[in-house]
Image (cartoon, rainbow, N blue to C red; front, side, top):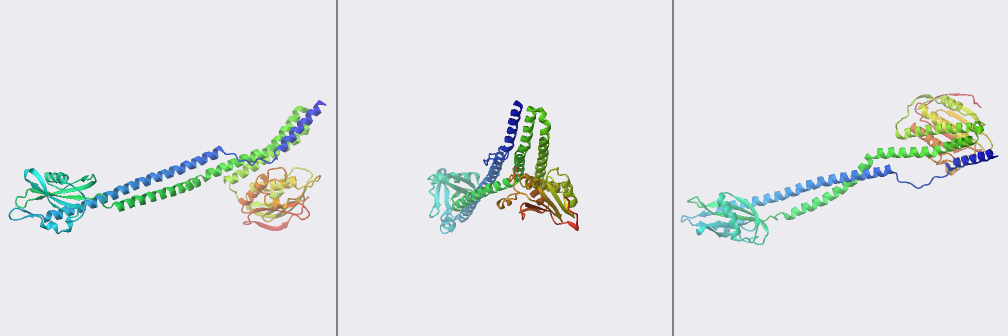
Length: 461
């Protein structure tokens, strides 16, 4: 009596464990650590690409700004040299040794900016202003001009410098000495004051254009870097998705046979004499596990592109007949209507697809209390498997080949693999309801290379 109670409890636990694997799984999506790492890596690549672009643009912009500022400075000093040379050429001495500056007053080179000032050597080693440009742009005292003039007179050459004017604003100074005609001694210096802000409008426009352009290019580079990093990581995303999908498929599909085997073993442990009774269940569960593992590995290789279909001449009718002969004995009825057909296909993949169609028909193609009634036909590059089961609702026909979609307790991975095999061969797979009940699955391989002699084999029961 106690043994019977233990046996009933164990069987109830096994059935409960088997039923739990078919309950709908939660739709809650957990964040994968690997996926989060890939997201962080993509963000780092985008930031690195943006920073490199920003640094490069900043360096180029700095060089451009400094080059532009140097060019405007050179332009201003060239104009200052020209005015100094014109002014020096217009200074001369008369027969009495007196300096003559009348030529300076009517010349355009001595008007406005850069402004020209002539300093003459005076007794007591002082310098006195003898000429200054009309409409001066900068308030500069004689003392400040004398510093540049004395430097040029001492070096007997043109000198340049940057120093403040009387208001503290920085200006350019250029001084060149001039000589007494008779004695050829240094008599004084021509000092020209230039404007460092000449071309400032264009300079500031250049800076504004560079800032806007660099900001736009940096933003564009950030977007481009984000897109390129995403594209460069597509193989990693694909590999990760395939790995997660394979693990999910394995975990989902292997629960059933494992639960059945565990329940049978627990019952056998409680009642060793019933081991023979449970061995067929364990054997069927192990066969189911073998089929599941083969399906998972085949589909994983197809998705990863590791095993491209190895096409070759294949007698499709003979392959289908061999698969039907391997079916386990049972209460089903199987009719074969095979016509000789030669196709170009991968024999291993096609065998797997046909076996999954047959397995689906035997599992779900029977009415309650009856064995499955299955008809298999081969026409050219087409294999059809029909049954007389309860059929499929019209709303479910469109999703029957979707992974994890099942109408009879399994995960539907077998039919999804059939779809993968058909697609890999350039064909398709269809399902439709049959008149009088049941469904018809049609696997079409690529028609290229298919040959058939039209010879019909006698239907076999």
